[in-house]
Length: 312
Image (cartoon, rainbow, N blue to C red; front, side, top):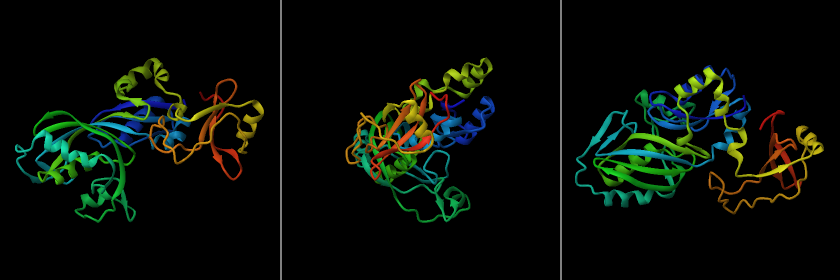
């Protein structure tokens, strides 16, 4: 089975734990996921099966949307509700307008320092391993892109916000940093991923639903084609001779396809980033053939990933 499952990850399980369960239920040996969610977080977790694992890297740049509940007045060492409380202050004096004003500085291109309780590596060790040993190290800040951030519910000392962001964004850090800006402290009380690229929580399946579907073999109808995450690229159908050339790894010339300008944003890209010079190719009988990238030196399209016959 080749493709992608849109799984609604439950709380209390790691993303790897979800992969293990999907592997057990499906019987597929090659299973992986895109976009790790913390054990306490829930929501959309794309799980790739078979040759679908080969497109994970192209899903990594897709934008994500989260629903985050933020508790004001309490800071923790993990930046979320699971951590040890490091600071408290009565937030009753804070208004929604003050919080909304502070949040304005988190929109657009920002820089974040990864939390100590994160999977980022420092000299070969995960930061969370060092944190659990009581060791704190200096971390370099990283760029993050926040496309949209807005308060959707106000029930002080907890409020809810929606965040649409790019890859590598730590919602826990937004909560913590907001608390620092306000001077009251804050932490991430809960987090739901509402969407990830083309996958939406409205269409996500729970693990119990998947298990029931496997019992009737209906689960195969729940698997998205592996090119689902590539639909923002141009597509081209090639003839048998060109297919043979591509399968042999040789570059090909393609007509009726526009070369992307990397300086121009592409509105249909799930990452809203510059248009990459990639395209997807199909055979004349509508099978997904592969991913090609334009090589300006050759003036031709070089195969980057070619898929086995039968993929759709």
